[in-house]
Structures are given as structure tokens and as C-alpha cells.
Image (cartoon, rainbow, N blue to C red; front, side):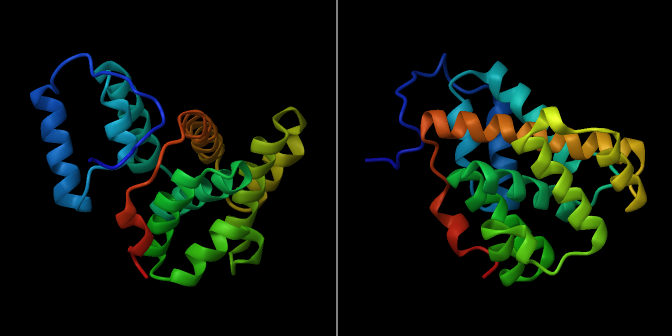
Length: 188
């Protein structure tokens, strides 16, 4: 019996393409696993490509935000949304990128308890406000980010990353997506 990834029983539209198999092989090589979120989306390669294209652009593409900062946004947003999948996977990424297991745990529980720079705190305050009360975002919020050293392009990236994880959290909750067990022991 294979591990459960989601609570839905969706049949794949067909065998995986060579490109998807190669992408999964690259994941195995770099991460030691194929993240369950990718396996969950693999029932429809068009949806999988859309998800991975956006994810890779936001999390790995050129940005004034470091990879760690982008992972911190993922964790702060997922903490507000209580997303088990993303807290587990991205909490592991924060631990790995920071080299600090305690930081990863603090971020999962409450980023405000973590020893963050003023820049990081401003970034996460914005991402959390965008998650909890998007209608209350105003110029003063963007001005606070600029005062912390972020450019307008950085503000776009903060907002896009937060929005992506709000979407991902909701899909993960709706389908009861489960993280790979390996994430629990990473970077401890």
C-alpha cells in the first residue's frame, strides 16, 4: 500500500511525459524525494506545469529577496493558514537555509518570536497582513517596506509569494495534502 498524498481519488490523465519524469528525477537528485505536492498535481500535467512554473519563478527566480526570505514568507503565511503540508515542507527549508533548527521551529509557531532583522520583520508583517486582511493594505504598509530597504519590485515579490502560498495552502487544506515524511527530520 502506498502512502496517502491527498484525500481525493483522481485518476491521472495518462502516463507522465518524459519532461515530467526528468523533472521528478531532478527532484530526487537535489532533494532526495519528489515533493508530494508535485505528485498530487501530476494527475494533470498542464496543472502541474502551471504550478511548478509559478513556484520556480517565485522561489528560485531572480529577486531582491533571498531564498531564505521567500521561504520565511511561505512559513509565515502557512502558519496563519495552519497549512500542515507547507509548514512541514517550508519549515524544513527555513531550517536548512538558515542552518538554525530553532529558527525554523519559531517561524512555524510564531515568526514574531524569532530573532529577525527589522527588514525580515517588516516583510513578514506585510505578508501576514496581506493574508489576514488584504483589504486593509494601504500605502503606509508599502512605505514601511520601503523604509526597511525594499524596492517596489521587492514589494511585488513579497506580495506574489504571499499570494501564491495562500492559494497553495487552500488547495492543500481542501484535498488534505500530506507532506513527505522525510521533511520532518530534515535539517535538525
